[in-house]
Image 1 (tube, rainbow, N blue to C red):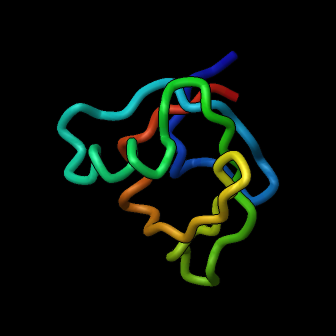
Image 2 (cartoon, rainbow, N blue to C red; image 1 turned 30 degrees about the vertical axis):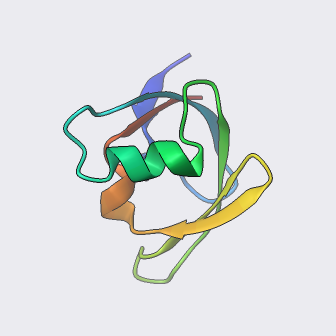
Length: 76
């Protein structure tokens, strides 16, 4: 299994969270939203210009900027 940045996934792809960059400016907020090790995340849709990205994290739907996803490492 390969570890990649969440921002590189395409709509329809799902993965599990492996790590959050310790220097990520939104680290605490992402943890509060559920981006914890082992959490399943699926990219549902992307806006035409790439922002925002519609994600499903567990049973929760989120819309986040692709820049905020760059510090999230996932395993396919």
